[in-house]
Every structure is written in C-alpha cells, then in structure tokens.
Length: 155
Picture 1 (cartoon, one colour):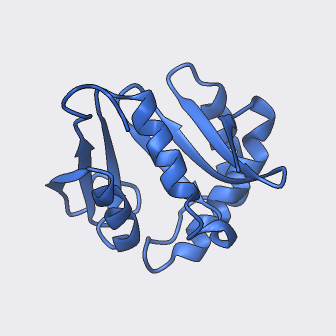
Picture 2 (picture 1 turned 180 degrees about the horizontal axis):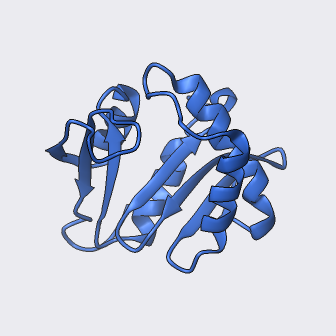
C-alpha cells in the first residue's frame, strides 16, 4: 500500500470510489443524494481547493481509499468496499492524526457503527449528537473530536 497526496487527475477515481462506497454502505449510511457525475465534479474540485488536503491509499496502482482534510476537520474517510478490513482506513486515519497533531473533528452518521468504532479506537470521542436536520441526508449524526496527544507527539 502506498499513501500519497492526491493529484488533480485523481478526481474521477476518488469520485467513483466515493459513489461505490456510499452505495455499498446502505443501510449503515443513508443513501447518497448525488449522481456519480456530481460526485466526480465535487471531489475533483476539493482536491485542488486551497482549504482541503486529500490523501489517497493505492494498492496495485489503484486508489483504494482517500481521506479529505481541512486544517481542523477530517471531512471524509472512504475505503472502497473491496478493500475494507485490510487496515487501509486505519493507515489513513493515523496519517491524518500525524498531520494534525493539535487535533481533528469529524461528523459521522449515527447509524455508521463501524466508522464510529474505528474513530473511537483512535481516540476520538463523541461530543455532539444531532437529529440530522443540519445535513443534506437529514439523518442523525454525531460529532467526534480527537484532541491530539497530550505531549503533541504521535506514536
């Protein structure tokens, strides 16, 4: 597995991975509301946006997962269904934590119990529960925060 910063030309592969992951995740996550084409356009724009940093995990030259970060948020962590359970999500999450040693926040759907457990194992704590009225899926979600290590070092 290779972890690397996403390139502008990775947009279509990242958008397709997101679409496939969201489709496979139902009912752990609510159905996505956008088309595959909209997903490609959205993630292609985020990759080159100055406020976002995107990292990908490659296996055999193919993008198997990605993590989208801002300065203080993990905006997304998605692993292709065929690559789940292999430690790829953990590797990207640990990378995100090493890149943001002062802490990170994220939102996760309440129904996404495997995601919530992954974040819990890595020191994230649930800090807010909502009824979902603030997200476009209108599904209950949870804010989780990781404060960073007490001494500022990872590992």
